[in-house]
Length: 405
Ligand SMILES: [Fe+2]
Ligand SMILES: [Fe+2]
Image 1: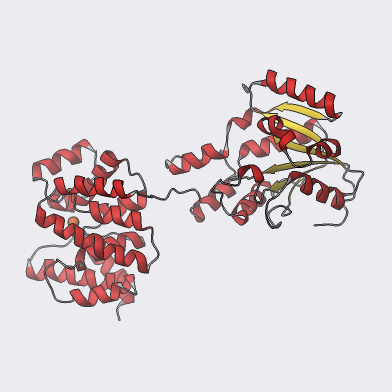
Image 2: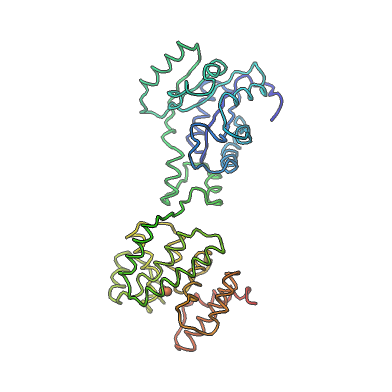
């Protein structure tokens, strides 16, 4: 940070976790800047705020970078690493003193904070001094209980001779927690965060929910699956679960997600043709021409629909690994490969040429194993059964050939 900041007489400090930063924060900063004729707004992403010590926050570096991306286009917005670089618990008073040191004692500071924080301000570290050395701007969305807030502001002003301003900002109806919830539920966050932030979140898979099962939930899922298939199919399923879990450990994957995908992969396998057709209609499942001719292959897509509908599992990676375990697809994720390979190599599956090789390859290189597995499956269908394969198989064989030993 610069030692002095020439030309700045009014500096607003916008603290927050920015997890993630959104349009509401930016509109607020700009409103405050205009309203109080501020020279510069300094965004200070928090490190470990004492009031939120138990919250599972995104790493400081991600939050800092998103804040930089969101503010870079505005020359009057700056971002400080002051709090995120500080070890241990962060207190506002320490930050304000630090900033005062950097910007010089003649700079008038405006600390922007949410209305909720004003209610608790006297519990903050060295709150009396804090109220003396900077102005506060309490921002709130319209509809908040302003009477109570204004009353509290008046009381603080009277008791501490401090300057607390109040500003309503409609855009504050947007909240970071709401954005995180939208991402969990696969809803769009377009226009709620700057495009650069949206792309950053996507690139780093931030806020995607991770499935976490209790022992009871696992048991309930197993009971459900048992009822949906013959004992023989259930033995195969358990074999796939075991094999997939072994791969999950090797490739550091989310074990609960792998467990669900493996357990449910053949949930629709033994449904009658009529039931399969009925469920495809019911869930509006789109089948390609090949699947329409070979309806048994639809058991992956139907299985995914049942998991989503009966268990509320919406995580796309889990659903896709069930959907495409039958013949695979282009651009398969590691989870999709793991389910495909576990299905082909589980202990109980009758031995076939290449099975052991595919299994040992899968333990250290999924792509090499994929090539052998696809090749073996292609040979079985075309030569042993004398049937045609799904057209995607040719594309996959061509793609994975580069991994052939
Ligand atoms: Fe299957
Ligand atoms: Fe299977």
